[in-house]
Amino acid sequence: MLKGKKVQLLSNVTGAFKPGVLTALMGVSGAGKTTLMDVLSGRKTRGDIEGEIQVGGYRKVQETFARVSGYCEQFDIHSPNLTIEESLEYSAWFDFLLASTLKQRAIVREVLETIELEDIKDSIVGLPGVSGLTTEQRKRLTIAVELVANPSIIFMDEPTTGLDARAAAIVMRAVKNITETGRTVVCTIHQPGTDIFEAFDELVLMKNGGRIIYHGPLGEHSRNVIDYFMRIPGVPEMKENTNPATWLLDITSRSSEDKLGVDLAQIYKESSLFKENNIVIEQMRGTSSETQELTSSTRYAQTGWGQFKACLWKQQLSYWRNPSYNLTRIMFMCLTSVICGVLFWQKAKKINTQQDLFNVLGSMYTVVLFTGINNCSTVLFCIATERNVFYRERFAQMYTSWAYSLAQVLVEIPYSLVQSILCMAILYPMVGYHFSVYKVFWSFYAVFCSLLIFNYFGVLLVVITPNIHVAFTLRSGFYSMVNLFAGYVMPKPSIPKWWIWMYYLSPTSWVLNGLLTSQYGDMENEVMAFGEKKKVSAFVEDYFGFRYDSLALVAIILIAFPILLASLFAFFIDKLNFQKK
Image (cartoon, rainbow, N blue to C red):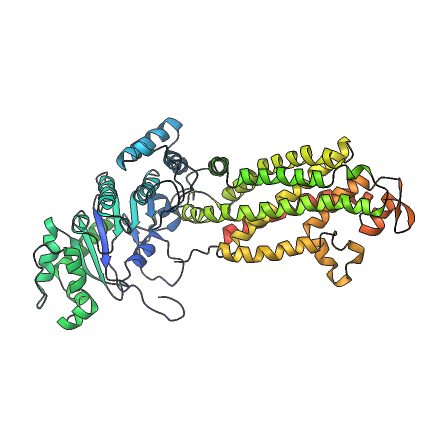
């Protein structure tokens, strides 16, 4: 029962899926076939569910069931920058049975052969409709990723939808190969062709309201199911060369049922087939008690350390093969540093007036703000692409959220490190900043923290918003804040008291504080500032509010910002799920 309108989607559904049997879930639109599959697989996130589900006679416990079952979604969601073989190796990594690398690779090879992907195993997955695999190859990869974890039960949501006849036949051949290994395979289908329909062993046919009207074998050339419905008075005979699936959907539609004046669900409940199914259900319950549960000693197959290593392995591969993200931001840093270096050539060595200090701060402000905004904007697309993959893998109980989030946080560090080194190597000598170990390190540290802050804020923005369009909207507000309250457009002493809290919340204000104060906060030379002579250190403190003796606090706050944002990312990606079913 769904909350709100209280619409009942499923009603008194009883049945059993057998090992080694390929079962089709079929029905008219709105019959509840996908809802039933989501309920059985534990993917239903909304509504109230009543009833009992058993696995091998034991009560189903979702945490354990997720480890012995696989779910192939209708939309094939994969990390675009891995190869087919790497995608399977990554999935296999989380199976506790694969104790050795050799055994892991052997099972991956076996799955590649079963699903007929061996010839293209080194192909990059790519983005749907843009690059990489075809729709049919992507569908087979979806099946292979679930199969490599060695599940006993596999659910497939419309595996042939959107495929042409040849591609659908290839996918169904792969599905039949899986069934022949003794696994239980259940597929939802919608208006399949004759060859696809007759590839199934059994059929669960549903009508509007989520009620079963047939559950039994198809028979050769669909003879069993055709004979069953032909025995119902008034049902029109199926014409020669008619697709049996189309015929079944026609005669079981609401209008056809009203015309016949019968309740097909009630007829099924009074049939001998229903009684036979109940006998099978009782036999499959076995001798186990109804209170016994299917449980495991651990929630996840891999240890926490193993989960983290696997996530980090995938993330670093994905990042390395994503030049549109990483190469772009590195080149942007180089270009921005060169332009600023030329624009502010040797300005840091000529500090005679307050304008000279403004120019130096302008060079710092330009690099920090422009490179930070670029990093934040580009990371949004990268994380948005991987978020749906994360949802799928989390549903499958592959790893904990913290393992994924920690890997995501750490994989950003080397690239931000490279950007910071390039910035120092290009900009520092061109502008003419002071060359001392202390001052160079402080500049490097401030730029590095700034890049991490913008990166992690972009990562956080994606996970707290339902889609990337909302993230783009909120991003603009953040850019305005870090620009206006950076202490450059309006220095700290000039900001109204009722807005000063925004200055302290803005990370760019602390970055500029660290950069300028470390360079000039200890300089005792006198400059002409607004018509009077003043020490540089005194002017920096009076005009900008930057105190040299507060640099230790600035250093702590600079590293606290990325740690806080990374922690919020880890928290919200664990608690929020915008993928509702």
